[in-house]
Length: 60
Image 1 (tube, rainbow, N blue to C red):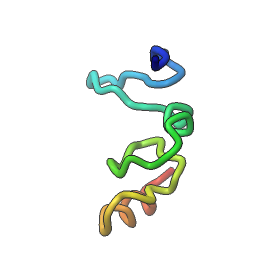
Image 2: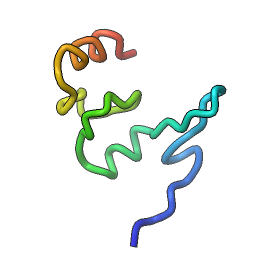
Image 3: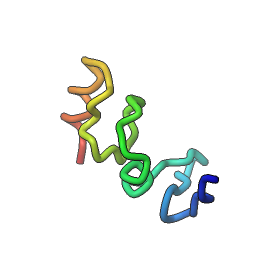
Image 4: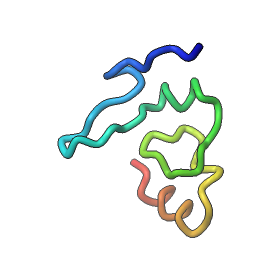
């Protein structure tokens, strides 16, 4: 059974009401899903070009 996600640890809400997954969540998952997530610790390895280069350029 999967563990329940914890707000503030695995995800948080933006002011617009969107859910953002944290770096911890992605590390626990173990791979890049290819969606260009804000906190991807895998350097967007599964995101197709040219989007991957754009995300890497804008990563802060």
